[in-house]
Length: 276
Image (tube, rainbow, N blue to C red; front, side, top):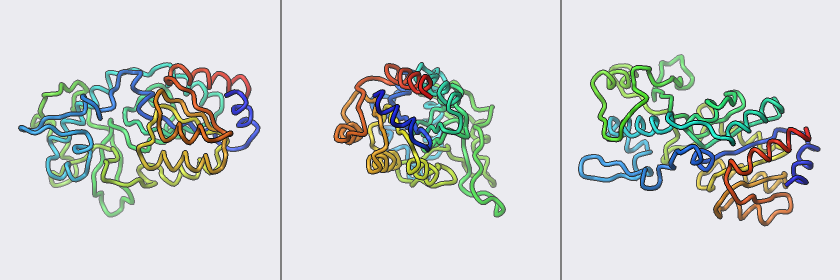
């Protein structure tokens, strides 16, 4: 590991940290693809992959919103862990040479102290909403915080009340807003999800550290594949086998660290700070 970090420090370009659900799991946030992901509407149980879609939202916006408000309550009850805080410390040390790309929508990196300008939330943020259509002078939808009138505490069985419904139907003529997240049946773009910026960063990167992600989504896969093609120093921190661990194990320019984010991220950041 240390030889790869020394190699990275001898190069120019940003040091890129890509985080996934594994780093948030240690703060108690479930992935919502397991037992916690099931949501009952009427007599039917839905999986996360079925609810987190534009198609589902167009059919049952109120029910999808209730699921996201429950998920938001789980996220807001969690606190940043040692891995989140270590990345904040490293950003302070590296400044503009640091870049964080996160798949997580829980906002924990920002609440830990990571700066928005150096944090690409490529799947959105569950604390925010947006309207599909803005006025003609708006080039892109504006991203707004969920109104303060929507409670942060949202039990799993709670339904949306009339006053809360009015706050969420805020897009003109009583149309529903939507959670600011990338759904399974949608594509990445630059204005909302920093697709081009992320790809540009990995093409210039001096180091890529992949933390707690299974490699199941498109943009992270592109990032790792570009890093592998460029033979950029790369560390993959993961407890389980994944496409990313398999790529790293084949490369002399990469290493796999089998374990959790809190086991390894503080050590990686400490070593970089000491050597920078």
